[in-house]
Length: 337
Length: 244
Image (cartoon, rainbow over all chains, first blue to last red; front, top):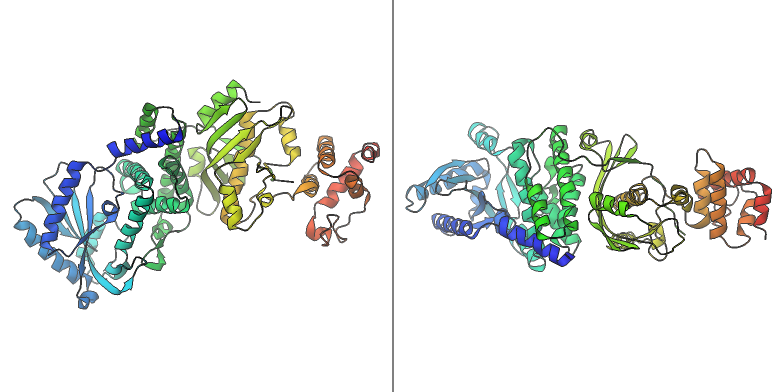
């Protein structure tokens, strides 16, 4: 199997097993169209689904709901309250959708659906369009309520309990991230294949370790995006190995600037990781690297499938999953003539 | 050359690097390497990774495209090339010459001094030693250089001055070190040059014999001791031979 055939076999596995299924895409389209109706068309999809980097099964859809009224700027909570009321009314009158629950979080309103075999929710983020502040694609930036560094449960609790510490608006560039990812996908579709594969691995780690595994999906996607930008024409096979390898080097200092604000990094959270959280990421990364580096040596489709299944089968275990031939070395100084 | 046992080891340890012909290996070399408590470890265990804390470790998991080739039937070790263009891109980005990236003029990787390689493979070539003791640490140092523009454990100057630096930096020198350095000095210098170096007084505060115009201590501070070691350690008869 040459490199081209091997890469195509890997991409085929990703398309067939890790890409969102047509049935699910149709379901999401139906839910999104209904939501658009409730919001009078003032919304757009953002997040990984809009960037074509979401993997199967899709558990949530991020939607931005722009307000044009700048007078709302002072109080994100009031905007979230208003959005909550609008959606609650819309879904209570819906004849096609059955929802599990609808609730406010610190930065959004979340709707959980009850009519799908998989857990599925839509997160609607209110936003104020900044017409005078535009990205390099001449698209507007937005102000969105600050996403607190809390998990979903705590974000919900924070909204309910901490009224004395109001939520701030922060600048965001959701359209810029979508456009950048789309442009890259058009020039090299292996970007989305790699993103789906590695985000599926991250999801498997999250399932096995829950909130102890604190490596963010968007951070991983930006590592992959950066790798494809720096290595034009790189294939899924190389990018997968190299991006898993790069994770270990991305846990010591923030590297990825926020598109909307050059003073902020999207990976600032790594500075807050505890030693245990960082070491868990390093351990799972090392295990993944030992598996994924086998990929370039695969000789047939079955070996590719075995390698992928092993990568995505993350289990909580006390024993290490591999025993490397650890080798202490005395480095020699390089020379030349 | 490599044996069938070497190739079995290679498939298990570095599956991305494959046998292209009986004289050539080619593909991706993916490795993990860690510096912890001043020790360098290739393929660290999970226990070793778990002992790291943010401030005291250096850990790279990296992949290079590599070709390993036997060009000379009589060579005692093989030649390696980086074929993915990463070293070239780093050199271009940092405005460096190929030689400054420790590559030979033909692009071959200069993994270490010829004395180190000669010493390691004097009794026969071993592919695992070549890859894990020389090639991977060299690539690890290249990854670090690309990031920080510093050679992690230092480097040797080009040509014969680097050979003398190697000898001068050794804590203890054996007769083997002296004779092998002398042998390679002769191989890499023009006739008469070696005598000129050995018979000219080299002092730290005097101009460096390399001809840079700087004082030796500011240019090649290790070569004074190397020259002294060669002069006292090798019999004048051996040195005299180079006059011929």
